[in-house]
Length: 468
Image 1: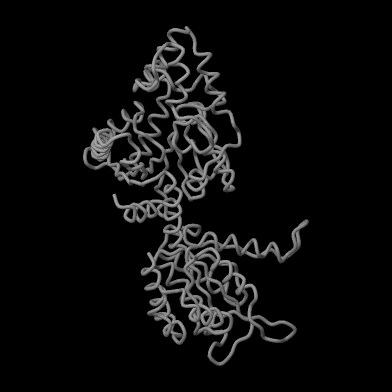
Image 2: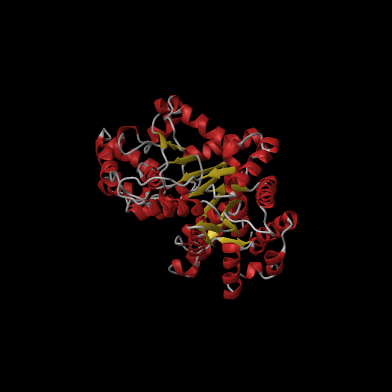
């Protein structure tokens, strides 16, 4: 599957609340953890087998346990290799930053949990069957560790015995994963699809649903000639990868190829960028009105703009800007109540500014942090009006100009409605003069002169559609 198609489809699944992630060992390698082959390599050496010749790693581990008559050494190796409590990777930090509520993994480490913490999200961690019966209050995401956790190495799934008993001992995990695979769109990352449990579950779902399986995606590194000793090895690996890609389609899994693992974080960032293009931050304030923009006209303009955007399924973010915030919020709420089943949080995000100093942070610093948070959660930033009264004198809204600087630094899509005047016109003039905003080239005149809210909305909508 082309990367552009994948980005559009998976970001849509996130937007609809149907996305899930399945993380394999590859997502933890950058944290210094070993993959499965390197984990069991010492076992192979101890029982006089060559790890390079072995493909059945589950069977190899079972041979080792058989010879030792216990799994104490296996448990110790799991602890030694995965016990870091603070390990993190760029890939998982990015994946846990996305508003995804379901994560599955066969890893024993804490990388997903740490990713959630780094992004101020609370995880409900399911390490064993008993955990499935309870829920963590105020959790943002569920993490299913279907093969166990480093803190309970004796329960970790690693040998033939463990796999053979899995469907009986961990039947609730199997049931939960089946349900998610049927109802959610999965992204498999760092996963080689060699795990017997997952293959069995995918097969059973295929038997039940036939050709009606849900769309899923996986990211894999493309087989490249420079990675192999000779052309014969490369040709063999390429054929095998192509066959594997075709086989995964039986389960509804489309493969997205990258030339190097370093491309995966960039791909995830593009997913995030596409997701946020559906979220619009409306920046504006007004204290002084004039003949062109009376208070009544300003209120109606803000109300209609916000309501029109929500009607097109955009989410609005507002910081309660003076003179515009109430109308923006009312417009959004009226449309949400009328056509969006009162799902307020899905279509409206509110970030009121604190009004008092707190501890060591000044009020100005807290306002800047609030602006950074708002803008970080939006892909589109619309600027309207922008004045305030200082000692009875009308001046440009400095906070709105700060929001413009933040949006520019973070590479957001910026749409200044110059026709509303004040700071919005100042931003408009700066952007037009710079020549850096080619996505507005066909719309400068409309943005500078148009005051009719319907025509302004149509212009905004065309700009957004053009950058998608």
